[in-house]
Amino acid sequence: PLSGSNYYRLKQVDFDGRYEFSEIRRVDIFGSLTVSNRTNAIANIGLGERMSFEYQVINTNGVVVQIGQEEQAIGNVDVDLSGLPNGIYYLRIVSDDSKVNQSFPIHKVN
Image 1 (cartoon, rainbow, N blue to C red):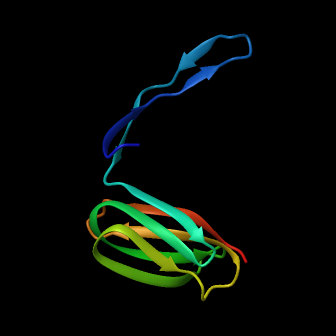
Image 2: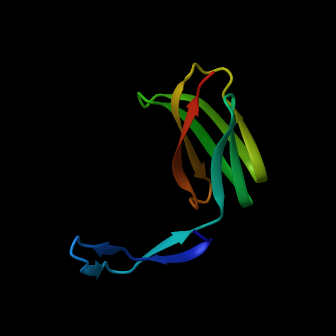
């Protein structure tokens, strides 16, 4: 999705070829944010615009195992996962101005 308002609708096709469209929905995206596992020990947050935010690494039991904060960051921010055991985690990102409140799955394996 692009930054700003994005519009979506679904097309459902039946086995007999008949189809129907859903209602159009608007989704507002503020800024550009991506998360990737560059290595097993680092998760990378890619920012398309300057923002301040807090991140939390959460295990599958819902326990926050790591917290960090970035001030006026832009570009790529690395989150060091090397101190955590192998497993599945969620990286939760919350911006100071409430533009972003998203969670992303990340996998740490050796």
